[in-house]
Amino acid sequence: MEAIILEDLTKKYRERVAVDHLSMTINEGELLALLGFNGAGKTTTIKLLSGLATPTEGNAWILGKSILTAMEEIKKSLNISPQETAIAPNLTVNENLVFIAEVYGVTREVARQKAEDMMVRFNMLDRKKEKAKKLSGGLKRRLSIAMALISEPKVLFLDEPTLGLDVRARRDLWKIILELKGKVTILLTSHYLDEVEALADRIAILDKGKLKLMGSLAELKLKTQMTSLEEIFLSETEGEVVQ
Image 1 (cartoon, helix red, strand yellow):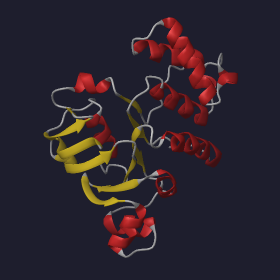
Image 2 (image 1 turned 90 degrees about the vertical axis):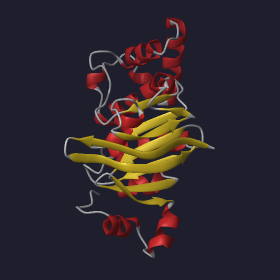
Image 3 (image 1 turned 30 degrees about the vertical axis):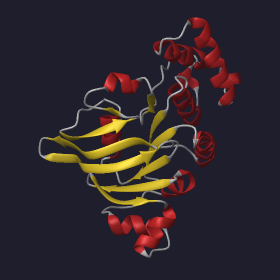
């Protein structure tokens, strides 16, 4: 079943086209990785699908509902972990989680239980009373994803979830993301090729707002007759690879 359908989705900022007639589908429970250089349209696509930006042209449907007419309904079923870690620095780990749970309409008692469950799930119970601003970069990203999941979304957008993290912190987050596959429909943006290879069911390569290729890594290799994702990526885009 298709969880997300994009049909000629377009976003223009004056003379610049950030997303250019993007059409694709994402299946229920699938992790689709958007791969592209900075400025390729990855983050803008997520903004359009999450209601943070309005399309210039085209439409998209999330769980059967149009982003043009039913965004408020859609928001009840999705959440996002943005590039900029969306946590309140002066609140503790527990307070951040309880606050977000309450935003989604649960009682304080239920919010506290959900927060406790998330801290156990994300191995952060020992940080319960620690202020978010004192956490390492990796733990801040982990908390950000926990906050995105506390509402139990059916669709999750992860925008550069491991940007700037060291190798160990990246691998820790990969484990968490892999555990979500098949349970939540995930759209992940990244410019790390190894991350895309490790996590994605399918890959969509964007360049200057346009979809260049889409499929599993095996399908892309077969289609292009190339042996690595780096070769495929460089053949379809302009710029330098970020490793």
